[in-house]
Length: 498
Image (cartoon, rainbow, N blue to C red; front, side, top):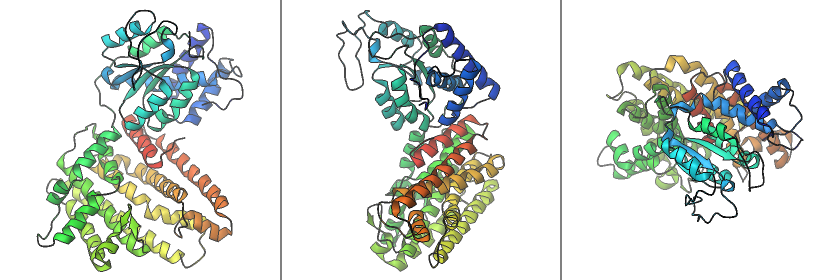
């Protein structure tokens, strides 16, 4: 975690450890730091904290950063029910010489023999209805965080294991309180028992639970089925091939990021994880526009394959595919006027969709014209802003409109979408393994007469700048559930973290 040159360690006297913990809590309150916080921000604050305590250059940087992160999350932990907080204990707390407890794929199956601290800690957790797991923390936490199977972690671990688990937890904005072991070595170690008890006993206040991305994805999977999608679309019953292609395009492939964003933003702003029909219809409309743009884009770029299968115009011919894309655009606008959507919301939803639709067309037109001339990096980035950012913006705005919070977040979503949209497209370019004339990497190679690796380094630097600005943009938010949600979405969409 820390880039300090001195060996990282835990202060060996309780007074110093308490001083670091207390100073971290005061700093977080004074600066009104809301979760989550970027790694580099925590590193910077840890350095300042240690200087104030006259503890700099002693290898306590990571320890201070852990307590800053703990303090950031402590104020939000009460929103999470105790039965959804995992108490994670390391193997090294067992009696190394006498423990005969077996292990399974999850971890140690404690026999409660009383020869180590684990049974006593587990009993305290059971009384609080907290699940307990004794396992190697770094790998297990990362796996469960990725799968969305845990909402919060109270963990005891060594600095080395915390360093391994931290990136995954940070990327997914998982609330975590870490109690560092006083020594490394995986045997006969100690920890601050009072610190752990305090973390376990944090109260719960019954307020809104965080939006779970895996839960949203599950609901999207349930929505985008042939039966449900077909029930909302207006088909001619005799057009069986056309109807099947339309439904297939909406349901069969893709991650449904955009409708997922609309629904997740609604949940965060409305503090409700149950989706009314108006939101499901609006989410379907969002996907209609997106899939229409892909059908037309494949035709314009003469692509033969998408999602590992022939593109629609390859399957049914260009005229029929053009018609299918037009149909999806029309259905998108019609669905925004569905009877389940209040009339007061319809105009705003249609306006957002129309604006994004036009920007996408302008971005595509810009790409066509630029393909006939030398393209600078700035031209390429502006094209991405027009082509990619509107889809993210309209998804967020639809969710906000459905939640009745559109005017509060309109300007913010504009700025954030511009940043994440360009970052997403740059990331996609960096993922390309073959030449692609529309890629910023290939455009840069041509414009600057450089090789692919040099061009990739320039695009990587540009990507990191946009990603960094997107995370900085989130610091404007005072709504913690929304901030955490968008942070998690960035981790999901960009697959990395600062």
